[in-house]
Length: 145
Image 1 (cartoon, one colour):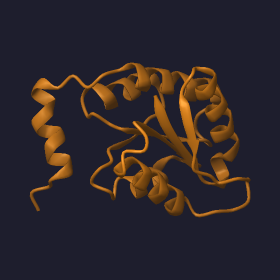
Image 2 (image 1 turned 120 degrees about the vertical axis):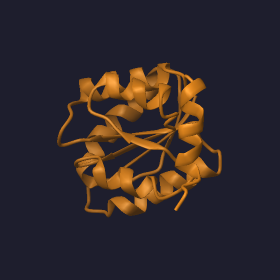
Image 3 (image 1 turned 45 degrees about the vertical axis):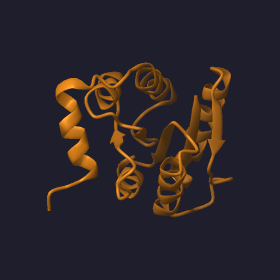
């Protein structure tokens, strides 16, 4: 799979570990930054990840910041993205099966590397269930307001 990964400074170490983990599993990984743990703004990296997803340059995205909240909000501003903030494997699985999420967000200050890897495994191994979820997911990209 082609996977893009991005973080802010608070999640730099987790991003580095997850990038290597994904490469070790045989995935093609685009590291969108940052290049160090120097302070950066999470919206910049969330928007960068959203652009890569919208252009079809990656099948899935992994977004990380201190809490996972800020970067997921930034990514979800793009209608091509459905980014789910998760903290354990069940929510990661449901994000794919029920919401057809194409990005996963996690908080480096809230989740350890082993749990983050378990979430990634669950997310990447799940498929969208379709069926009754299709109409709901369609509404996420085309709001009625």
